[in-house]
Length: 288
Image 1 (tube, rainbow, N blue to C red):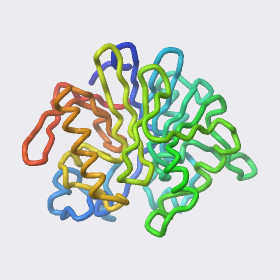
Image 2: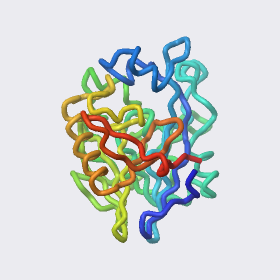
Image 3: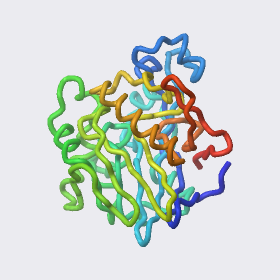
């Protein structure tokens, strides 16, 4: 296991688990038959596979950035049972990195689905949701905000307005339009595909580079080009963006981070041929 934090030039990166949960394996692999995907990630008796949210604490210059705040804690017992949700959240994840929500300057969810943006808000004693990071700007793609505000029938079940509506009231919501630099050496890039406004986060310093892939490549089991989730709104675009990002990562030695792999937060890759990418074993980074 790599020592934490890892370095990307002058940028420090610490992957922390902020959620552990389970989802239906079929939904996570779409048209891929179970006989294939269960070899990589076995299911429980409810056909659910183990997942996590591997958030990133990124320190770039004088900014502390939190990428992917996770599912949060706004769930009743029934919902916790459905998702097999463990007692992990952004507060506990940050604590393992020696931080609290007050220390965060920028929060970047790759998109506003409940498992990625839920930790952006908390619920007070009166049951009212409020932003969970009192000093932070929230960076979301404008097209993602529009999708979450008016989701179509295939999108509606993945968004929870309590996860993001309070952010508009903070006056610290920054809506990006495509590629935007959010701190020295850290930028967001619009990909679409999984959602209308899905974005990845790229870190670059002193010739070294890493990319947080979001749900373009949710786990290392999705390193085959045609292994996509049923949640992808535009699967052909997801596939194209995956190929672009992974080919670039292979050719230039970019470290890739995955949001949902329960064991591997990040690694470098090599070309396995025939639309497959392989993990370079001695580069594996585990979350804390």
